[in-house]
Length: 273
Image 1: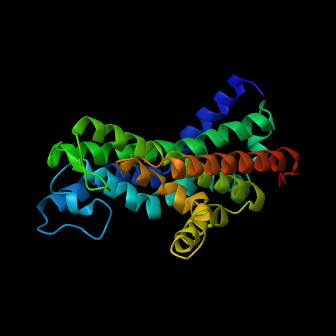
Image 2: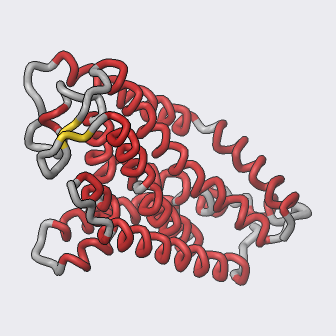
């Protein structure tokens, strides 16, 4: 496997990805949805006080990206993680195009690496876009005033921006874990429906499991706990244990799924009908 070979596969996969209308639609949804949400909350007379940081959306623009992260971790980010990763391998089986892909002068390892970079890179970029735009829209439309943390103390703007940035970055690890799981399903099942729907269903089950009386450590290690691990940063005495547990579990899951997927893909027989 060479960097030039992986780069060639990556460029081809990016061209294929950008030619899909659904990807363009998802891009615009990720760009416009946070702005529309901020605009609606700006003119609304009530606040979503039953959600985390919802009561402060009219006070500080820094509360709005946190509100978006709370919603995104439950529904949006798992879907973004699986949208491309769950289809990038299975699509070749669906359209019977492996004979075109594997007959090129690129090894299976290079094909696997290039496809994985696209499958993992897309949700990472979309997650960062959602976090950045919601932060910018909140500050622009509401203002950059101090925010109240989960301990009830006032957090100054500079510290608040830093915590918002870390909160957004913390979402990348569970996103990568679910995207890696989607890649594994895409390789093993050769079915796009399973590859895309499996991780979303798994994340939904994890959300339901977080509402049960499972041990706290088990809940922290689940995708639901990993997406919510940033909550501990917003305390007077930050609790970083959930963050480290969520990050460690997510990275271990990602590495394991990718290793299994690579082994299966490199060794399996591919029909070239």
